[in-house]
Image (cartoon, rainbow, N blue to C red):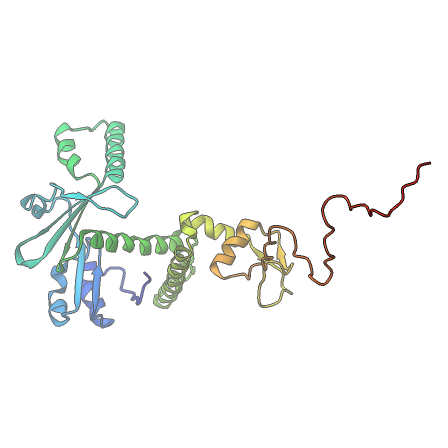
Length: 304
């Protein structure tokens, strides 16, 4: 997944009011809009009605009355084919829409631990509040106008967080949005750089995932390894792992670059065949008969 368009709105704009404007300005007519809680589907009713192939998948608040009314905490099973342990339930509600509830057991444990740590530090623990919050720790409830497989709905929203992490990396970690200049054009320029960086990063992640590298190391470790691969300025344009123009590059980094297609690997020698080399039939001498040669009857034997 990668972003396909971007738009800058004034800082005092409300997300809900920018929602329909973004769809119209960029003429989005097909696909599933995976948004967060600040973008309610009620604000784009007209846009959805005018665009039959445009759909939405939006989380709702944990205190939404529809969760209890439709018994969304009575889970039906566990999602398969993903690393996390996630309970799920799907139900069609009034109006033809669908609710998808998910509970990540690991996230629930972390949220509960953080909540208890805060109340312990501030000495504000309340048993009644804890009983109310306990069932919704790690809970995610999505609303959609499409009949989706629960796993598909979960993965769609899970992939959305990739963009959040990528944007956060370039805004906060790399500080690429700092221009030290105020003004509309400065903001537009910094967001444009941020957008291009996000697209490039999403493609890098997709390529690394296809090569199987992200199954061995994280994306951050991969970028650290690649940043250590220095190359001399007089090197030929086509990099090869054995051309001698790399500076102190480790073998594991070469393997990662070769998997990504950034360096041509060393040619592998053909494995030697097992066994003896076959003899040339022209140089093969006739075999000597086995055993001692027979004595000639007329041969004389002399004793000394």
